[in-house]
Every structure is written in structure tokens, then in C-alpha cells.
Image 1 (spheres, helix red, strand yellow):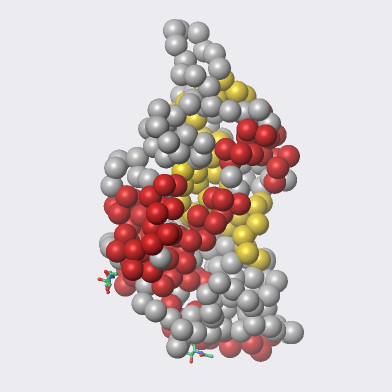
Image 2 (spheres, helix red, strand yellow; image 1 turned 90 degrees about the horizontal axis):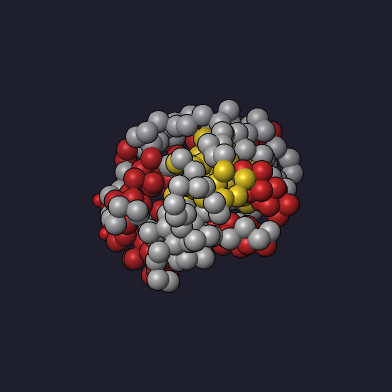
Length: 268
Ligand SMILES: *[C@@H]1O[C@H](CO)[C@@H](O)[C@H](O)[C@H]1NC(C)=O
Ligand SMILES: *[C@@H]1O[C@H](CO)[C@@H](O)[C@H](O)[C@H]1NC(C)=O
């Protein structure tokens, strides 16, 4: 379901209330007006409201390694992308044109300045225009997180565009929890000096990357390269309840052989 109409939402909510038992109000960082079973697993086929479990319940946390941007000891965020339960991407124009906000920086600043500071640090655009990048990620992906639809919030508690900050905060929390740089460093995979000359050197194998992550979190990542140069690492998630993300085995492909994981040129 790409567009949530309120009648569809209410119909599915009613179904959830009628069929699931026992029901409990789930504790969450945002108040909900739906009564949700607490341990629904996304993509398991359980008939619950899209407010209670993300409809597009397989999500990719895409983290980038760009030597020109971000802290020298951190991957930066590309995005959190809800996919269909079969691992297919959603439409490029997102899921809700009515919420295709283009003022993400202003929305976040008005809501949570420390979140904005974290986004500037850990989610820089590699084209130098953060608002453009965040807008793109919000419109294409954020609007597709069914549990963040405004109708899922308690009516009296909802502030306009609150779900935007909730989306970005969720992602930065995942970045902190699944800190790739730290996980790799624990297994002696650290950035190397830039390669020089013609001979490939200072590279890691795909297997080393996959094994390091597997031993930390019990799942493998997808690792993406351009040539040998490390570009992105994807971690795949499903969701328990409304917003408890847990990693699952990847649904995508790797595109690296030997991996050149180079030291950043940024000062921080
Ligand atoms: C962002 O844009 C939306 C839609 O145009 C508007 O309603 C809202 O007030 C704006 N928010 C801020 C904080 O500027
Ligand atoms: C939940 O939100 C919908 C849409 O705003 C509203 O119609 C419904 O009455 C709300 N339900 C509760 C229990 O507040």
C-alpha cells in the first residue's frame, strides 16, 4: 500500500482491534492513537494497522564512507529506506505527496536543535547541500514509513511535521547503535593510507568485512564499492512493534572484491 487513506487506516485498525488479543498500548517515544500489539513483526503477514507495524517492513540502513565528509571515525548516513516485504524498492516519488516537505532543516530546527546538530555531523550531503539531501530522503523514503503517518499519533499530542523529526531521530539512533566504524575497528579493520602507485595494497576482503559485522550483530551487511573504493554499507532491518528495529540477513547484493577503505581527508 503506497498511499494511506484514512478510511483504509481506520478499516485496518478496526480489524486489528477485532482480531489481535491481548492488546496493549505500546510504549514508544511518540504517542500513538492506535492500540497496538507490542510484538508484531513487520512483514510477517499479521493483520495489524499500518500505524502498528510498518507496511513496508523491510528497511535498509544505508551508511556511506566518503573520505571527504563527516568525522574521520564514523560512517555517515545515506538514509533509511523502507522496502516491500520482498525487498523491492518503492516509487521514487515516495508515498505521500501531501507531505513532500522541502524545508527539512527548518522543521528539525524548530523541533530539536540538538538533532539538527547531529544530522549536520553524521548526515552531511556529499554535494554540500544538506537540506536538499534530507528533503530527498524524507520525500522518497520517510513518507513511506506507515507508522509515522500523522493519523497514527494521538490527536491531542500531534504537532505538525512532528513525524519528520521522529524519522530522522530514529535513524541517528540506529547509526549510534549500529556503529560500523567501531564494529569494524574491533576486528582490526581500520581505514588505511591512500593507495599509491599501481599495485593494489592496503585492501581488505569482502569476507573480512562480512565476518566482522556478522560477529557483532549476527547478520551480514551488503557492501558496495566503486571499483575497489568502499562506498556504502547496507544493514537490513525488520521492526518489532511500531519502532523496535532489529537487524536481519541482507536481501541485496554486494559489489566489492578487494575493498579499499581509506582514511578520510576531513580534519575532524
Ligand atoms: C515547513 O513547510 C510546511 C509546508 O509548506 C509548513 O506548513 C511549515 O510551517 C514549515 N515549517 C517550518 C518550521 O518552517
Ligand atoms: C485516531 O486518529 C484518527 C484520524 O485522525 C481519528 O479519526 C480517530 O478518532 C483517532 N482515534 C483515537 C482513538 O483517538
